Length: 558
Image 1: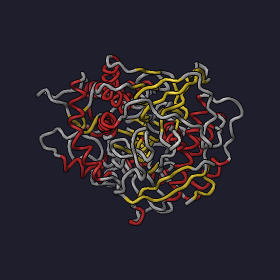
Image 2: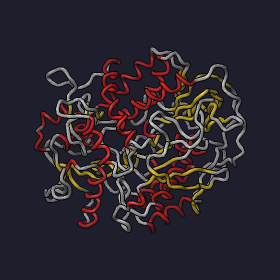
Image 3: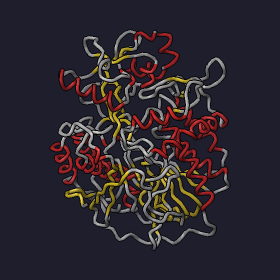
Image 4: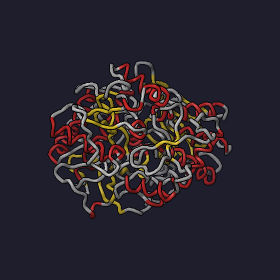
């Protein structure tokens, strides 16, 4: 079906290419998924170029506090981890993808250790394990107390430095290059100047492009995601002909430090692991919020906790809930959560002596480019791994700490597939796109974020989503040369439009998607909502039954 007012930019007004380089594979992004993909391909002897719009290692991974989920404990087993993931995913997980992830997760942790990752260890020398929401066993591996993502990033960046991989920092991917038969055969990229101008544009021609660009949390006015999480990769893939799915499934983390109603930009996250160690959510009078809301209480899945907090605040009129970790003790908090403790104190709160104010905040995007766990999309030559991909692992709600693990597992699988399938000889010659080029004016960025936060937050309504769709349709277009802010706001506009369209099309509440006007799940909506784009910029939406392969076209490398 065609999605009414839902139109997005079908092609960017990209600058002309001043140079051309050829490589086997281009990897876009340098979080855990991108770094591991590049490293594995380089280890296989393939020529790899990494393009990242910031510095190497920027992205969401290095901000991750909790850790990586894997079955390592003596009281744990694969079936339990699979069950916990499926329960959290609220009926939208791909069970085969989940089983593959869980089976391969321990090897991914072992590989990190082989590469030099300094994990926190138990007395027996094995990785120390903790628990987070939705998990029935202690199975979260961590590092530096609450600096797990930073350690993963350090490990992979250092390994990549000796792997012979070409790295283009401060380089933004603009649009895919496509052959006459529609295969992706590279990217038009440009270097980002200090003022955001795009300079030195050129073509990276390759047999395959792997997008590892992360999520789109910055479509909201405030999120835990870093500033660069603007959905660039998802928008690029959509313009290249790929389908995207589950975009309405944005996970709100229950415990984001509340810093006033006008908070904007990247927010301070307080890891779920704090509750895993015994902290509890309370109201302003010290009464526990989650005790009677779910059998797992404060360790219920994130969608449940966020929705419970949102309902409590709506009922009471309070601005925030509170996380009480005082019972854990000052010495334990300083050792186990040094980064969180420092961030709270910098904001004027001391978790060792007082409950700290928290509220749900946009955190992780469960949807993305429709792909399998090997990274294959419906467009030959285009692959996606990590948060930008919708593999079916997370379903309607990600189980805590499954994401970095998924990125590492998918990266290794994608690299192995490409190594086996890459042809010899040069990539095919690209052709010019026939789509009408345009972009959104960067001046619209703040208004888009405010509208998305207001109408597509933890709880949604058809009325609010319709209003959001209308305001997005009226966003002003760019009048001038393309810049990085214009690339990013165009991506933000694209993902916000997809989000509003999908949330409006799903008349039920499931996982991260909560509709006040449709509060129960409906069995007939246990399907993916997928979207594609035509050359005019109009979105086309369809439902996809669970278990259908992520691709419905012949997939391969160009």
